Image: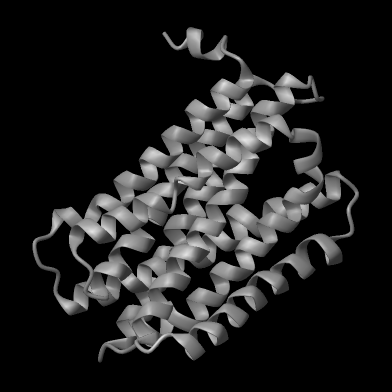
Length: 261
């Protein structure tokens, strides 16, 4: 049924696959339309789940692939992964300090910006990974085939479902309208198709720097979780219960990554 898609140019296939992953991100973000009014306890629970999702995604979707890729390419892990991870967190730390100097309503604005930025940043290396998988077919690289490339894209797409929620729900909690919360969540994934095209065209160059991009995004995500999401979710009286939901979010994302990896 879908043979005509498999016969297309690998760059076109990369675009189609990444557009599908973006659509799934949008579906995840659309969860805010399912509730007319969400109780604060429910929002805190969902915020805790979002934190768990982001922690798990940082390792299984970003750091673990970065380590494996570095080993395969014989790149020093200290330079490609550890340095990239620290730089990702440091980048947001510096951005945080700059915003504190110029933004009057800095608490709400900072949290919103950092959340959107970190997950958007996380989508860039995922898009590059999709593009690299399809581009490898174009360049005839060893082990590259259409089925494995589409399997990777489908896996990333399903993982994007809770990641879309990880943006829209916290924004809704901040007081944003349902439409704006959905819109920002949806737009966070638009970089994925763009990165996929770049990855497919520049696959030979991207392969060597992708481990750094992956770990950089992981560092940024962990920084946001520690600095913003977990402290905000713990303002609830039932802190212990929220912590359990953070663990639940972690397990959900871990299973998605492991089973679909």
